[in-house]
Length: 400
Image (cartoon, rainbow, N blue to C red):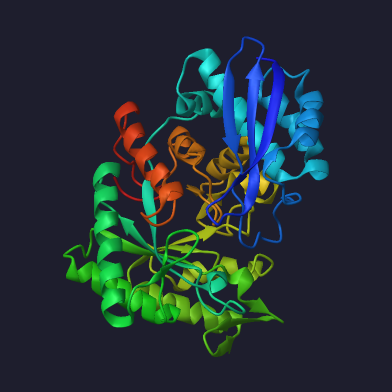
C-alpha cells in the first residue's frame, strides 16, 4: 500500500485554532484523511507539536513527508519513517499523515478502521465505557491552575448506547443545577461546564446531581487532577492552599471515599514517582489511578507499580503504531487502557475506532455538546452496531 501522494492543509480545531489535516493517496487510488487535535497545555513529556500552521494548503510539509514515506509499504514502515522525521516537522503533521494512511489502508483492504487497527495490534475488539466531562477547571480557568482539570461522570450501565443516554441525562441535570445557582454556565473547550465552584464543590454538586437523577450506583465519578499544572516549587496549589504531596494524597483519598471516585487521573506531577507508588494504599480498592502525563503514551515510560491504568493520546506520541506499541506494553504491565481526546479537538473520530480496536476499558471524549465531541459520541453509537461484542467488558481487575 505505497503512498503516491499527500495533501495537507491547516484546519480549525474546536477552539478555532489552526491544526493540520492530511489526505493520503495510495497507489491503487484509495484515499484516507486524518487530522491532529491540539492540547491547551501539552505535558512536559509529550513530543513537540510543531509550529502553528496557516489555514489552507500546506505544500511544504506535504512535499517533505511524501518523500519520507514514499518507499514504505505498511503502516509500521510508514510510521517508522514518520517518527524519524517528527523532530523536524512536529506531531501535528506526522499524526495527521499516520491516521490518513490508516484510513486509506483500511479502505484498500475492505475492512472498517476498527478492524484494520485491531489486526495491526493483534487485539480483540470491544466497546469501551465512557468518561464524560461534567465540570472543567484547572488550566481551563483564568490564571494559574488551582483546581482539578475535569470532574467527570462514569456510567456503568453495561451498554455503550445506554451509557450515552445516561451521560446526557447527568450532563443536562448538572447544567440545570448550575443555571439555577449561577445563571447560564459557560463551556470549556472540551464541553465541560464552567462554574464558580472549587474542585471540592464541583464534586459535591455532581454527587448530588447523580443522586437526584436516581443514578447512584449506576454512575460513578472520575477526576483528572492534572497535577503537573498544580505543581509549583515542590508543592501543589489547590484552591487557596499549598499542599505537600502527602497532604494532597490525604485530600484525594478522602474525596475518593466520599464521592465514589472510580477514576483518578494524574494525581501527582509526573516526576513525583514515590507519591504515585504510595497513593493506592490509602484509596478505596475500587478507585483506579490513571497515568496521563506520567506515561505520555510512550511504551518506553510504562512500568508496573506506578499506576493502574494508562491514558492513550495519539498526539502525545505522533503515530498510530506508537499508540499501539504503548497499548501493548500497558497490557503486558497489567494496566487498564483509556483512550482520550484533547482540549482542541477536530471532527476526526479515530479515537473511537482505536478504543474499540484495542478493546479499551474506557474512552474520554468530552461533554455531550458541540459538533467535535458529538461526532465521537455518534461514532460510538455506529460502532456498537458493527462490533461483535458491543457490551463493554469489565475493567481489568474487576469481577465480571
